[in-house]
Image 1 (cartoon, rainbow, N blue to C red):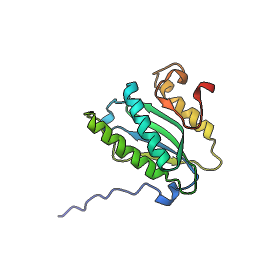
Image 2: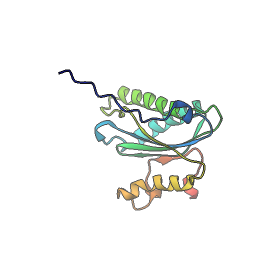
Image 3: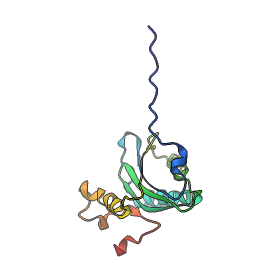
Image 4: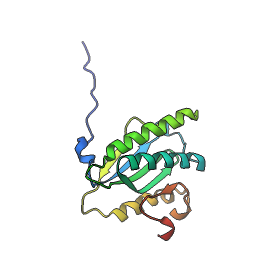
Length: 159
């Protein structure tokens, strides 16, 4: 008896939901949970690629935070033409190429997780939740001590 192939379930919203002046939280994981984001060099390189791709797609980052095997991003579209989904896809492609050129064995997982914030959701609460990740994982006592974070909107030294 011939087996039917298992088709991957569609779990992503239509592309038009990621365009415009919206805010979306993304989590992007490293394949096989390889601990990659452990040095300032890698963080700085990933940040450069991230900020360039966000700018290209008319987006700002409320926060970007790189845990050892994944990153959290809270991205906002600045214009009606901002494309958050394309910004993340571009970031993954360009940063993945950088990892390859540097001979790192780590790669991004194929997909990513996302959550589009509703108008009534508190952005500051989302930022604080992301900032709390390294504390909950007992990597630092205070989120202020975690070095692999940033924002194009906020100055975390003033928080």
